[in-house]
Figure 1 (spheres, rainbow over the protein chains, first blue to last red):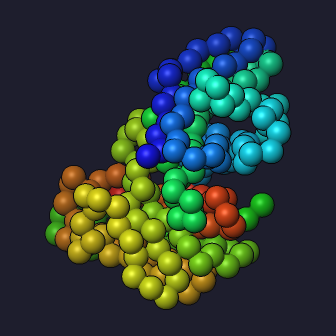
Figure 2 (tube, each protein chain N blue to C red):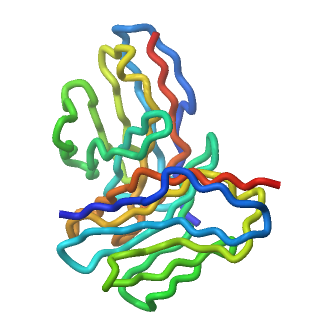
Length: 114
Length: 114
C-alpha cells in the first residue's frame, strides 16, 4: 500500500532563509511523487513532480525536491524564503497504477516571518 | 495550464436540504474526475472517482447514497450532498485528470450546514 508522511506539521522560517519541508513515502512499486501548495481560499497548485526521471526535480517559484529511494524521502527545499511562500504544502504519492488516484500527506504549514 | 472551476465557491444550507456542487474542466476534456473532502487544517481525503458515462467508484466509508456523483460529460461532474447535516460541513475539492498521474484541482467549495 502507498502512504506518505510529512514529518513536520508546522515550519517557521525567516524571510530570506532556506526552507526545508520533509516528506517520507511508502510504496510497493515505483511511485510518482508530487508537492502541491495551497494558499488560503485558493485551489491546490502543483509545485513539482517526480516521475522516475531525474532524481532532482526543479519546480516553480524556486522550489526543488530530491527523490532518494534509499531513504524513501522526497524533501522540498528552497534556498531563500519569500513572504508569499507562506501557505500549506502537501506531499503526495500516486496511488495504485492506472487508477489515477493520489494519496495526500497531512500537510505542512509554512510560516515566513519578516 | 489546465483550468478547473467549481460552483458555487461557498454555500450555506439548512439541515435536511440537498446541495449540488459542479466541477468543470474549462479547457480540456477529462474522462476522470475526483472528489475530495478537506476538514479544517487537515489533509485531502479522496471520496470518489468519477468516470464519464459510468458510475462513480467510492472510497471505503463514503456513503454513496449521501454523496451522489454524476459525470454526464467530459467537462462536467457534479456532487450532490443529499439531506445534508452539520457534520457534512466541509471543504469539497474536485480535480480533473489531464493525463497519467496528472490532476488539476478546482478552487474548492465550502459547505456550511446549519
